[in-house]
Length: 75
Ligand SMILES: [Zn+2]
Image (cartoon, rainbow, N blue to C red; front, top):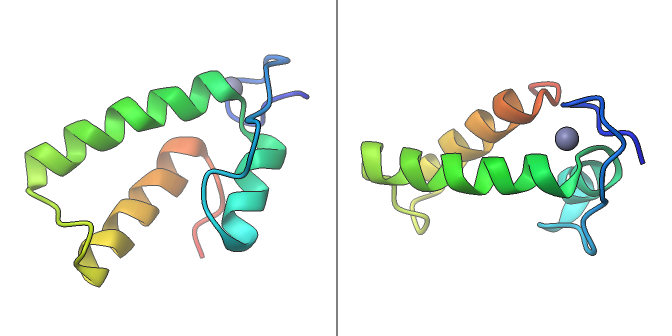
């Protein structure tokens, strides 16, 4: 597959990393390397902003940051 973020032909994720359309889109368009980059970035953001995954607002912020990071459309 050709990754829509880094434009390299990369390895696809073995499974959608999350449920729903978004997970499917990531699995279809984002390579495993870029996903790993986001995983690292996510940890930095969570620590920096003290985000709580149990908090719906914080989860929303993180999803927004993820879409931005991966170059997915923001909606
Ligand atoms: Zn990529």
